[in-house]
Length: 310
Image (tube, rainbow, N blue to C red; front, top):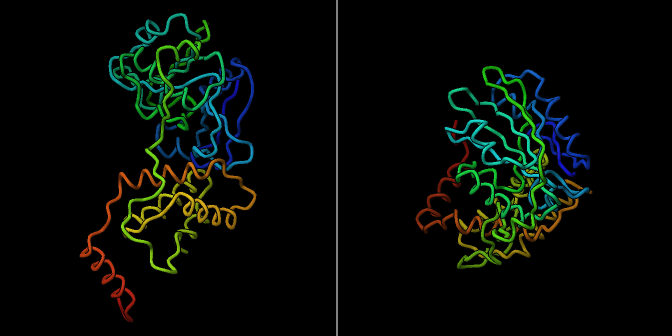
């Protein structure tokens, strides 16, 4: 069974492991014995995480461009009020599963992580069907963020102040193919891609796609998500200015920065990530009006004057 582990949120080199279900449950039980403060700092900086995705061996981080598939299990968060262990088991009876509480769980409002064993490796698209199947099974109560294929989930612990529960149940492995008979594969954590931003003009001659400032930020950032942020940052700048930008040009510019600042790291399907970035920007970034452009340039010119800010 494949699963991926990282040391903390900022671990840029998570590792995909192939072991059995019992070894994975053993990892959960070992972690569950460790006492931790129930704070964001403790979780993000000191708590290991696990995930069902499978990474390419030579990629960087856990961005979608480095996810090559999903292992033989799935994890979901169930944070809606009213869910007790008995209620969850009533829905999942007969399935092989593990269930544990999370950091903010309290007797008056328990919050759960549900881990279900599947019968085979599956694709990112098939994971979308699996998520929707279990969301329907659990009355539409799953945390929508856990439908992202590259979502990480912190290991359980003896969180101070929480009601810490970890249980495992034997049962049947859930058939991915049977789920697919009723639920169509859907790509998750994806925004509609476009081949080119709908800018109205070409960028002025000599304008770089990625600025020196963006390169400096990329170089200083921890691996894991920085390539995506580089793509979005460059595309956002072009959209705000109203300039056109193609998938090919954005991909080439970002790969040039990656080759310079992260030599040896291979990017898997970078053009797909560039298309997603363009799609996200198209939906979320607005082109500046001529007056907004004039104000921005005026502020920039004032900031360059001698004695400004003194």
